Image (tube, rainbow, N blue to C red; front, side, top):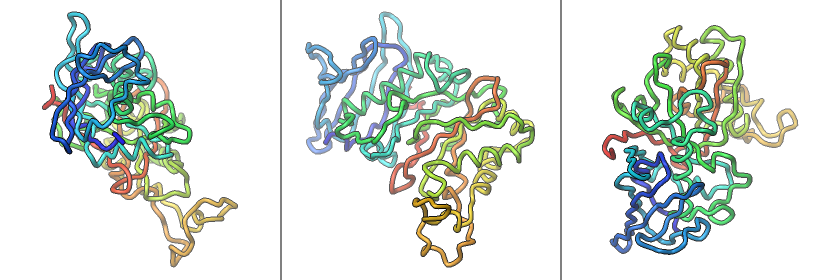
Length: 349
């Protein structure tokens, strides 16, 4: 199965429809074969370079292209050339597991830094929605590369029980203007400068809105957001999951004006997502799902939702109006599943 690969560098200038060179290297054979990632009005296909075959994304899957895929050059449409590069993942991101699990996880792509604006990405009103070519094209190109290069075909290698709209493509930029409560997600996780552009990859489920329109102080807001995070996967499931919280500007303003750092918010959210074991064990409240009672010597033990504060990723995006944020639950975290990845895109520009 062609899913056993690592996309090491990615999507050079996938901002407008056009074509980009792809070099696929087989580790077993040590040979290189070049393919073209070709865009139509609505889709992408991967075909052997120079092929005159009719482009049909449903049957242009390239099997056994090996373990490394590197996108190079720039993508052009007519005489326009846009230089936008996005690093996709390493082996610890585990794209194979993400695409073959029955869970509904998909790569969530968060771009942080000045190049997102140059590329025309949306970070404000409807940032996670439709209507922006750069966001949609980058997210869609990743999905079609996973399918057409890696072999992650729906109903075959991709075994998601329900799937989710993010499997069509899930990419957005952070809003790092004067309203931002702290530097970008990639800057924080990868130690990047503010003038660098970075990208974060997260194995996420569909986003859910977290509302608190009455809140005015940071402690109360942290408490409210923590309630939303408790329901990642299931309130009865603990420690095995990561989460991404996309703060809206009105919520972000509360933390910014109070001087709360990213780390303090993460610590507060982690502290507030603990629950006594007696409410989480199997059968409690008539719910079959839960933790095994024999795991606990004392059922009054406080059990955390997340393995640590750093497992709650904080991004910042959205429109000015609305005291809303978005919670994106993760897939199985760490070595058993997927670890979020953040890196600079500067080496690929």
